[in-house]
Length: 105
Image 1 (cartoon, rainbow, N blue to C red):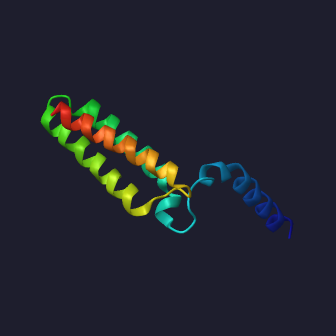
Image 2: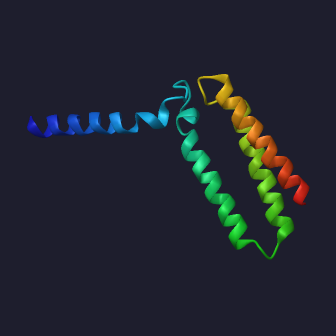
């Protein structure tokens, strides 16, 4: 009995501490719940591409463009934020990143 109570208390504590990660995100889709994780993974991929593909700038730029396009399509399809302004802001940022990548090629 005590073990279950402790587990429930831990779950409540974790839920309370992690709620800020999901405040502005929709609850409808599993993809929108993992938006921040996808965002961090994308940033990590950009860093890996920039560090390890310095000898092949064409491949580096092409991968950055593809990653940007994937993220843009994801944002347009899923629309992870509850408010349209959050999604529109991220879409604008992604379009800006896409054009910057295109200009470097």
